[in-house]
Image (cartoon, rainbow, N blue to C red; front, side, top):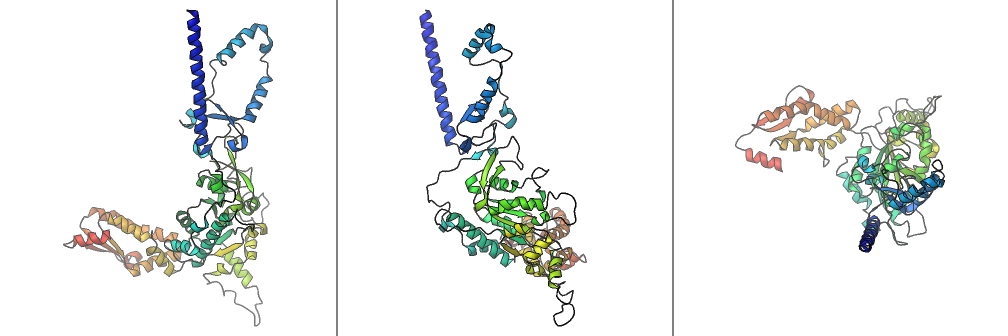
Length: 500
C-alpha cells in the first residue's frame, strides 16, 4: 500500500515538473514574440543591454548582474549564527525542501500599476534586425518638396518662403535617412531656426506638417527646460518626447523631427549676477543634441529617476527645427542698419525702417548673437529663415481659405441647426482691421469672432424660423445688426445649400 502511495507521489511530482517546464517554455516564447522587451527592476536596463532576465512573481524582471549582487549581499549575513547552529539545521533543511520560507512574498506591484504589471509606455520596443546595406527608407516613397508644399498650402496661408524651406528640409531629411547605409558620402543634416512675429503661424506650420507626414514628430517647449540638477525638465526630455511619439521604438525615433518652440526664451540673460540655469546653460546643454550624440533619455517621464528605464538614442539623424518670436530683435536690426553716418551723402533717417513690416527678413547671425544666443548654438542651426508679418489681405484669406478656416467651423456649427451663415466682404475686412490693431497675429481673429458670434449662437436655437444669417460690417463695428432671413417656401433649397 505504501509503495502505491509513493508511486502516485512520484507521478504527481513528475506531472508538476512537466507542467512548470511547459509553462516556462510558453512564457519564454511569448516574451520573444512580444514587441516590447523587459526592463530590469533594479538597474532599469533593457534586456538587449543587460542580457537574459530572471522572472520573479508579479511581473518583476531582474537581470543576471543584479541577481548575483543580491545573492552575494544576502550570503554575507549569518542571521545571528543561525546557519552554523546545529539546532536550526533540521528546520533549515525542511524549509529548503518546501521551497523557501513561508508567509513571505514580494510586494504586489500589479495592484499598484494595474493588472498588466509595468505599463507599455515605460517599456522599450525591441530593435528589429535589418540586413546589412538595407536602407531604412525607400527613396521612391519619399514625397517630393512640391507635394509637401502643396499639402501645406491647403492649411497655411502665405509664408511661401517658409513653406518652401521646410518642404526641402524634410525631403532632404528623408533622403539622408534613406542613403545612410547605401553610400560612402555622409550627408550632414541641416537644422533650422525659424524666426517670426507672434501669431504668424510658426507652430501651426509644424503641427500641420506632423499631420501630413508619416514620421515621428515631437513638439517641445523651451520655456520649461533648465540645467541638469534644477527643478524643471531636463534637456534630454525633448528627445524623450520624440521617443514617446515613436511608441518607444528607438530606431523609429532616431529618424524623426523635433520642433523646439519658444527658443528665444533661453537667450542669455543680460546684466545678471545670479546663475542663469534656464538661459545660456540650456543652450550649452543642447549643443550635443543638435550636432549628434548618443544620449540616455528617460522612457515615459520628463526627468531621470530610479524608477524610470533609460534608453540610448543617437541624435545624429534627428532633424531639429527651432522657432521663436524673438521680441525686440527688430530694434537690434534697426540699430545695425542705421549705424551709418547721420550727416552727408550716405546718411539715413533714423525712422527709415520704423514702418517696415518685414524688418525681420534682414536679420543676420550677428543680430541673433546680440539678442543673447551663443555662437556655438547658432552655428549648429545653419538654415535661418523668417516668416512674414500678417497683412490685412492675409488675414482675410486666413478667415475663409484654409480647409479648417474659422468661418467654415462656425458655418458647420450652424448647419447642424439648419441655418446658413454668410459673411460679407466688408465684414471680413473689418475683422482683419480689428485683428491688426491687437498685434497678436492670427490668434486675434478667433477672439474677435468669438465676441460677436456669442449672441448669434445664443439666440438662433430659440427660433426655428430663422433660415439664414448674414454678418455685416455694421454689426462688426457695433453700429448695426446682422441680416436675418426667415424660412419660407424655399426651405428645402436652404437645406440643400447648407448640405453642400
